Image (cartoon, rainbow, N blue to C red; front, side, top):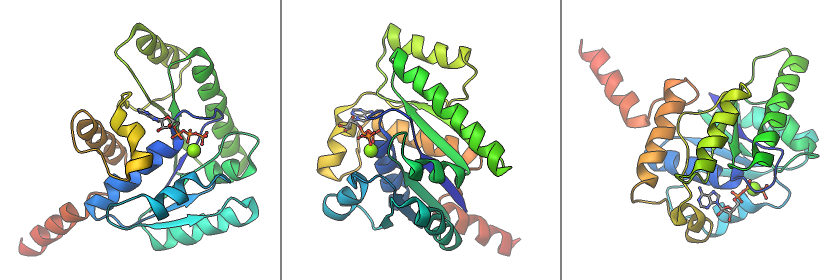
Length: 225
Ligand SMILES: Nc1ncnc2c1ncn2[C@@H]1O[C@H](COP(=O)(O)OP(=O)(O)OP(=O)(O)O)[C@@H](O)[C@H]1O
Ligand SMILES: [Mg+2]
């Protein structure tokens, strides 16, 4: 069981988009998951209800901080994976969701202000982890990356600041931007490759379980031997 919270102090770096991509990609694999939308704008839950066209997953809207931790805990007891999409800072629900997480994914764009805000979010996670006396991992996920000098500079600034980041980054793609209107997971390159890389990296680090088919095949081999 893992709780992955997608959070950032800055508005608009792609939290909801990353949550949509992960939810749709994992549901397509047949993974049992719940998504909790903790953002009062309800952007994710509206999308899940009205637009999303893939295999179903459970989606709950809970932006009330006093109920959110209970809801995350309840779903974590039932599903292998819980994703939590959050609103920006000043939002207590986001802090609750970060404190409940095994991993906080911090989507970050390439601007100077974005890198500064990523640092702030990382420090907040560290503070929450210390206060809760538990380990909460956090990783920057570079989003909307272009093959530009600015993007390379942002990556090096993040490394210089000692912020841990996922090796996988997401490109600036029309297919990602369209997801909120189409409800369909992108099926062409480079989106397919990037999403595959992202899931593989999360699996390698232990934040995601194996895909359901793989688990089944491995279990069968064990019985045969
Ligand atoms: N990799 C990407 N390529 C192209 N467009 C993207 C990408 N990531 C996000 N977008 C677009 O950028 C905009 C902001 O993304 P999104 O709503 O996911 O950010 P957010 O962090 O959830 O914002 P908020 O803080 O308001 O909740 C949306 O229009 C989305 O479609
Ligand atoms: Mg959002």
